Image (tube, rainbow, N blue to C red; front, side, top):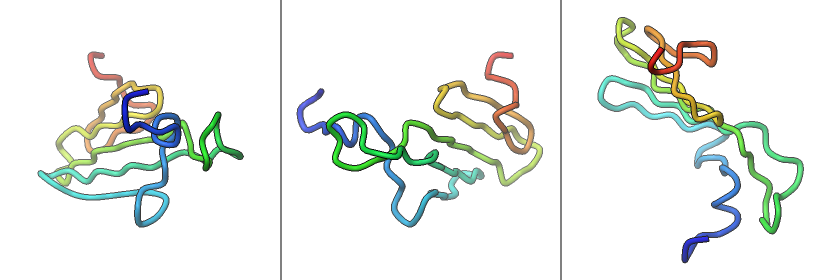
Length: 92
């Protein structure tokens, strides 16, 4: 691990401040980060449970533009207006 890195930060995604999902808007897109279901117990030497799964979406305020989604598969998907896990991967 890099200096200053911790087990808690490296293996799991903590819930963002303000609740189980974090959302914000900038430059014509609304961004939403949603962590997956928390693990039942801490992973490895971690002191608190987290999750290894997530979704992150960028939904345009103009529905004619493409929206984007990436999840823990790290495949970036796009679709007009909003992207879902069934949307086309980038490059297809």
